[in-house]
Image (tube, helix red, strand yellow):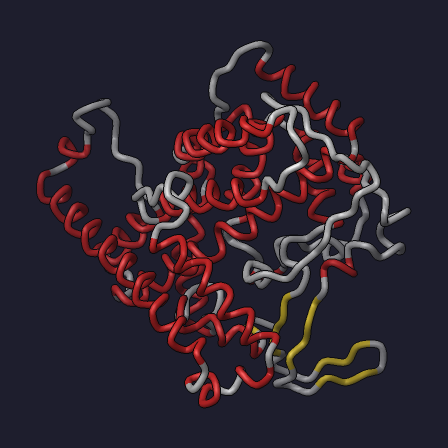
Length: 393
């Protein structure tokens, strides 16, 4: 099942036929081209970007220390947006410094438009949607989002062509004497210049897709894990102990290797994503007849997978409502059905950026835990769940 379900079409005005929504040979070709972009050697280059932006977030939440309970999610959202913009496009948008910027507001409003179309049947037909006030909002947002992406693409392309003209020596940064870090956009431009069949419009689709997919879901994963750590003090203490064993009393930045050593924190993240998957529902359009438990679904049907329910199935997870990171110890994971836990989907259309997302979540969580102790005013509090744009894969 490689085709996405019908509701994904509401995203196409923004991200076109990028990796999330495309199908057939276009999807296969682009997936094959983009997969090497998430090799650990390339991911390692982005740790400085992640660290620098998370330092800003950690500093901004300092004012809440010893104060009343507050919502950390807006701070995490802006931090994640800064990180994804700089790693994908190679340019900072400084969302944390200017949360009211035109670009940041356009991302928020466009997300609201897509969600409203998904939940309001009268907005789903294109004709009726075009007659609604939301169509004007979408038009304005798309002009901002696409103009920014197009401008950055053309600028980076000129820089890329100039660097090739000047030769390898010019790739040395005059200030720090190191090779310039390549953003994901640069890798797309390089592929185009090396002969891969991809147009500027298709490059924009992929960049916009990464921008959409790469900030909201990561934000949710970080926030749900912070909540779980605050609620379960014993788990938090164990995670802090692991972090102290890596850093000691040093205040140095986390390295890529440091993040690989955070085995228990990774278990905590996995358990948080089990109970609170950032993509609690996703859909596929089936291409052939499928029979499940005696029920036949004809080709062309839209099927929905609900990880939120799947991850709580008692056949696969004993005492499923309990938060227990030790479920993901290697010895406790052996023999578990490979598709009973799918926070990043599964199969050929699984999330291409899951390693990047995990790296970012580890870095953010460890940065907070190194400086602050998390707690809830009400230890029995449960999160109030809402559906937002990032909840789609």
